Length: 304
Image (tube, rainbow, N blue to C red):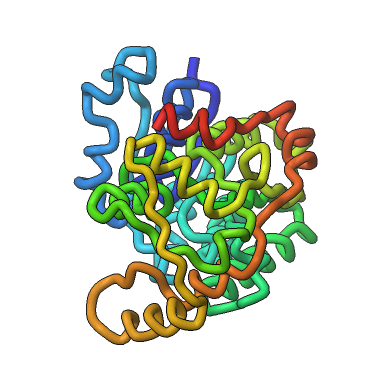
């Protein structure tokens, strides 16, 4: 028996793909929002559906074409959302204002948004400010009858196409060396993508415990940036050769790289964040999500 209908944005993202599969495995009917319905169809190829543990032909979902950057999409999204138990907003939280409007117009009282711990950086940039503004829109809506939950993951890893540790692995496979800035002493606390998905599922299932709360999601313990990179090297059998470099030189190189076409190896904002610790207390999330327990970096890398 179908447990309920959810509208999901960002279904084509790394996290979204896994969340969609988990939700379908739990007999949810899903309405998936995407800019590319044909591409989204590749998410649930028959051979991949078998991982759901059920009959792939019974997967219950619909796709809807929409660009969340286009404010005119609200009416169409509200039509799709009518009758849904909740909206799970996995797309960028910068579109939260649109999704709050969608919920209100559709009469949906539950909204779960995926944010980012980037909002805590002391080196704010446009990306961090967009996260902060998106969260404010969500928390402001709690004054009404809209029951919202914000999930703030730290660095997400565990997908072959992720832009975090998978990118580090690709670098080490090609070069085997890594620049070392300030000894790599800053703390990080990455979260395995399936642990984030588990948190999303639990938030959907626990509206009273997670409603009107912002929960920070991270791995079980903080480690140094250097230890994290070395763990990736061990996982792919590429021991890291460190090349110590002055912070000012790395920052200047990142600024120069941003001038030229193409994606830089690291932005100036990313380099500056090497100066700050990204360590978080996850006790509140563990309690609210009913004993949610993220796995260690070592265990996550073994499963990747």
